[in-house]
Image (cartoon, rainbow, N blue to C red; front, side, top):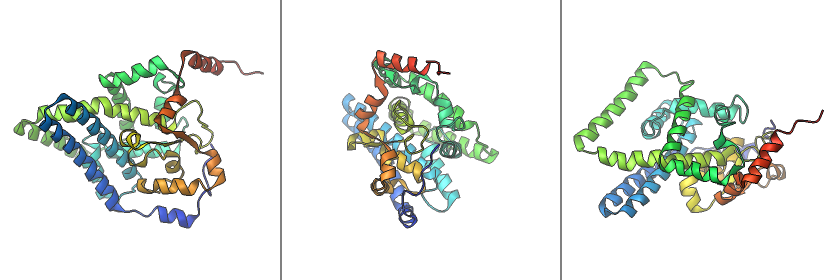
Length: 321
């Protein structure tokens, strides 16, 4: 695989890599505030349209905090790693029923062995129908509808937990603390009569739109028939998205994914600036895979049955001797 090198001056990279913890802390606080605000408005309005809107906002911000964990995994928050790890668990991983360390190990393996058999993300997804492209329109639509009833979400959750737990040496102390967290949450919900609200405003968004947003974004990051997997730049997609698309499908600049894989030391809030700098380099500009909006992603990954069958037939044509 061709890896990126020399696309940016070291001094410029150093400048872009300077951490501003207040920006990540504020982003995390705002994400949580929007989730609580959406739930509160829905309860106050007491209307089904307000509830549907709340589900979309909450699922979008669940996706957003999951993306922030991406920065935590690269220690792009604060220099104190132990404090950073605990904040990631308490404010992101545990509420989303995962563990920070499991995610970090998986994600760093993904960076180290990008788009190879040793890439834990790639190995799990490669060959599955959901990540084989182009997809027939009918299958793509049914798969997305499956998230709205939870079927696709449960499938994805099982795969994610299997991947994250494969190499996650949790200590007995950590396990007890995590169990205590969930027991304390259950006790508070029981004492306050909050179980209905927890199910309606956390679990319903989580098991429907959250996993759908995660799936679409995971496709956007690395998949499609036009990707060049021999090149780390060309095998990673950057999407120039609209503000609405960004809010739900590409929060916290995760759509600048080729830039992130090229220079993971740059925190999320500097990625648009990094993109502008890198695009001035002719070699990088010629290698990067840019898609314009998530409508563009649909066009790159979904097609007619004839197009999908043609692709499948070409892949099974014997090589000439």
